[in-house]
Structures are given as structure tokens and as C-alpha cells.
Image (tube, rainbow, N blue to C red; front, side):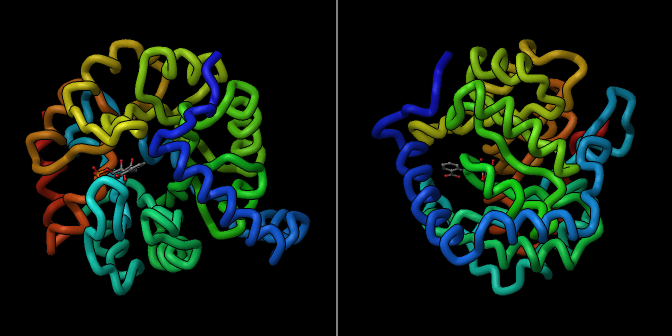
Length: 273
Ligand SMILES: O=C(O)c1ccccc1NCC(=O)[C@H](O)[C@H](O)COP(=O)(O)O
């Protein structure tokens, strides 16, 4: 079994910062209070149903549109003065779900961004963060998330199983993110129902869109398949859809586009069979 012991990698350093920030939030708001807020939140929307595609789907591939201010690989991406307005423009274009990066140090995100997006749209919302502690799952639900991210490379098998179960107990689904065949096998072994292949290697930040077609054949037919990262134009979206992706996660190309509503319409149109 591989674990999250990735000393020295980009992912390792991000997780270290996430744990430090989490310790501060935990001191400010105890777990019991966050747990209570999670139980009192409006029930989660069904992200699995929203992302599930189908070979005969004539409306085009599902798009998970991301609110992404900056990134370790590209630095500052866009001034997003209103995540709520951006999210509304994504929904107007036909996005199936919205991803909100809440990690602050490298991505400039926050739980306030998640709150703003949740209040603005009626489609499922993904809390996209580096989830390594039970506290963050209650926190995600308390802030209205319907879906959370589990990065296989950052978790050992026990954490993966426990966090997937906790997500489901809280009424959320989990997008289980992989980058290698071994990680796909680990995701399948714990019963993941939504599996992402991130073509960005989180240890080196290299992006290779062809990596999706290498890994996709290893995914069980029963899972919802998400192609993550690397979209720069309609071409990549169409390629991912042709290779069987149910949904495509797009960040940078949307926040830099200028007309995100039109971009999402174009992406979906380009992927129609
Ligand atoms: O985007 C990064 O540089 C990055 C670095 C380290 C860990 C995660 C990172 N990104 C998270 C993502 O997976 C992407 O935000 C998401 O898939 C969208 O990617 P893109 O469309 O290429 O912006």
C-alpha cells in the first residue's frame, strides 16, 4: 500500500500548509460545533446523479466548472471579485456542478468562496481542497458542499475508506482522484463511485492530456468517470468525451476566458456525439 508519505513533493508541501491552517480553524471553532452546523445544513444535492453521463447522451459531456483564483503551477490566474457571479455564469452555460477551491495559501480560495457559490446556484458544489482530516468533511457539509475531493496520493487506504464512508454518512458524494493505475485500484477497492483521473501530476505539476486514455480503460464501468485538468480549448473536452469521460473538470480555461457561459456552451457542443 502506498501512503501520503511524499516527502518533498509539491503535494506534500501543500498538505503541510493545509494541516497548519486547519489547526488554527480547529482552535477557533471546535469540532462539535462544526458537526452541529453540518447536521443543520440544507441536505446535500445528488452530485452522482448530476455527473453521470451516458453513451447516448446528446446534450454533451458534463462540465464541472471551477472557481480557481491561482495555482502552484500558473500563479495568479484571474481576479475573481465575485465568485457568486462567476458561479451563476457557469450555471447559465449549463455546468453540471461547480468546483470551489477552498485552499488559501496556493490557490487563494476560502470557505467564504464556498458559501458565496452555494448561495448563488442550485447545482451541486464541490469543495475542492486537500482533505486529510475528519474536521474538514463536517466543515464542508456545514458550508453547503455536496461533493468533496479525496486525493488518493495524499491518503493511506484506511483514511481513504474512512473518509469515503464519512462523506456518505454526511450525505455527500466524493470525487476520488487518481493519477496512476495503482491509485485507480485503491479507489476501486474502497468502493469509490465517482473517480477522477487528474492528468496533472500533483508531485511534479506536469500536465499530459493523453494520460486520460492510458488510465481510463482501468476504470470499472460502474463508476462515474471524471477527466480533470488540462483543458485549453474545445479540442481537449471533445477528446475526453470521446474516450468515455462522463464529466470534465475545467479551471484555468474558464476563469481566464472572459465569457464563461459561452465557453461552457461551446465545450458541451464540441463533445456531442
Ligand atoms: O492547478 C495546479 O497547479 C495544482 C497544483 C497542485 C495540486 C493541485 C492543482 N490543481 C488542482 C486541480 O486539479 C485543478 O484545479 C483542476 O483539475 C482544474 O485544472 P485546470 O483546468 O488545468 O486549471
